[in-house]
Image (cartoon, rainbow, N blue to C red):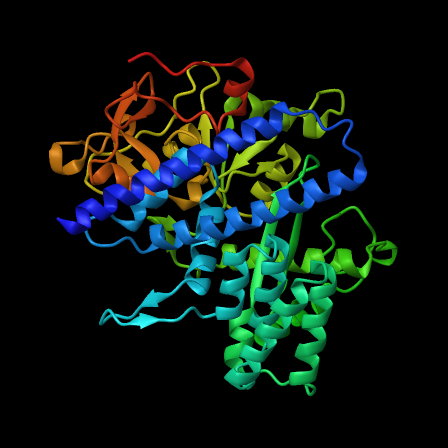
Length: 456
């Protein structure tokens, strides 16, 4: 009983404090500051920045508790789904906050014993609101790049020193201080296989308006060795994507040849057929377009007066210019789902069985393009095939009853937290309290037209 009373009192106290903050902020917004002078404005900015940092510390505390809810408070997945819906922040940002909270919040072992924070000095500074988000990022990065050969005591001293400097310098200076400390602790630059494995990364940036994408990352020694061999093979005059260019007239820069080497390696790997399967069919490039656009592209390739149609779409959600599609199709076989121009219905229909066939997945690629839950941006490559009526409840594996859903949303629907209802060829989602809604995020043409969700 005491626990219940304590929980009620805590809720009332927290709500009262938040109401007071809301009221104070309303006063601040309503009070003009055009006559207070710059000196006082700087004082205001100082206090607002501190308050924002204190709020950030409180936010990490809440995210830490959400990431490890006590028994009876629901699952972690449910908590994250609720945060995504209410706060409208990306799943990646939710994961980042939960991971950082786990490093600066006390934890519990499997036996229930209390474990101090991984980064205690940083935890104290975040709670006090003495450092900002950019400082936190710089400190974590500086600590994480230290090799495992550095003694734990030196790692702790590094954290403490950086937190101390963070109260006096900006994050740019703090980053350089962290780099100098790392050079001092590891002057010979010795890193173990475990260190290298921990740091390996490759990040594909978003596709720009011109269709180009930025690639950044760190390659481990083995990957670099593979890449060097392929890059060496793409020497001037060899493997030039411009087939019309003479060997002696190869004008590509070294960086452009490296790019072409990566493309050669990836296309060769896919064409080899040795990459296994992905959700039911061989790993390959999945591209969707319409029959009319494909015919127009074929004519435009030979007649400059015919305009090229809009780009096709890949299973990863990226845009592929029609000229590139034709070039790829000429070199290798890819799954190409073609739709009739008038009805937008696929020409290939599925066959009934519990597990979706490769043909049925292609239909989902072309129709859904990605997860069908409203506002989910996961592309088709990352999705599972979902029965609109669960298989256990009599659902059928028919092409018009199968739709894409990412792993999290598929589980959410399977567990009964969401209901899915086919409507006018699309899949509507509802939690039972609102009308079913479809996902327009993968269909920008619908967003531009202001299409409403299909009626029930």
